[in-house]
Length: 334
Image 1: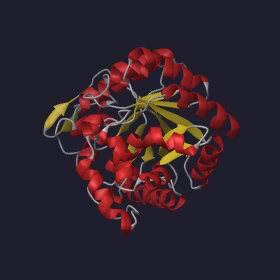
Image 2: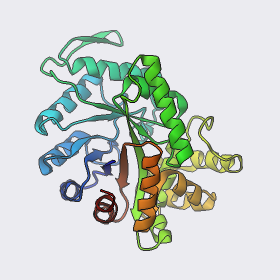
Image 3: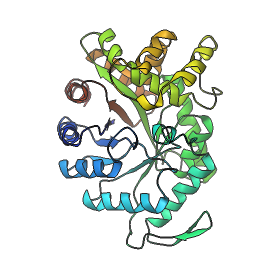
């Protein structure tokens, strides 16, 4: 199994240091969130990471089709690929905090598919007709792997058809992961792609401490963020227990997008306890607890079929998460 880490670009100097640490302790991928209203600019941040590292693959985790024109994204990711010596990947989905903080609805799946197809053509240097307009990035002449984040059944099938890899944010339990992978494979078949050609990444909120309760306490804002994102639009096909459905709907209504992933005693940090969702969200979306508990969860995720585990290092102590996960999980499992 390979490992990736999502870093929040809340400070460019610290971002450089965190990227260097992540590569040093064994992470294969480093992702940067795209949320212009909350964090530093995505491609500036990725350039910092590119110059601070030499081996890790780097890219947005994830951008969206609404805040950046496909020609802008194609030019930016091609530039990053050049700067990093061919290490770039393009992570994309329908949009979360980047679009919600602009009071925009997430992109529709048809928009997402059209956007990915446009970027792929633009990266070859060819002209493409996008929404009735001829667009191009003349100097771009190589492809970059596309990673699509997906939660619901329709998005997972689409990702299997159009992406090179899928970042599964449906959940980490074996049942949910296996069903998600089956939907990705169905998308491959529909698109006429060889079965198993699309890589499966599992996305996990993460924190490590000497006591599980301490690790979960710091992770509560991120747990609420996963519940808010993964269960939006519909609960159909998303394995939410009937007894928790109303609590999950309340989470959708009360989540504060302006505080997305912000550490400390925010409103989002209190929601999961108030709604009785903390343990459910931790089991569903997190690798959290003692080092041994984290290792066991990682092994279960691998057995369910994930090829890459992409964790988050956000919250009050991201350097600690990076270092302990690298030294006490990655090193022990390799």
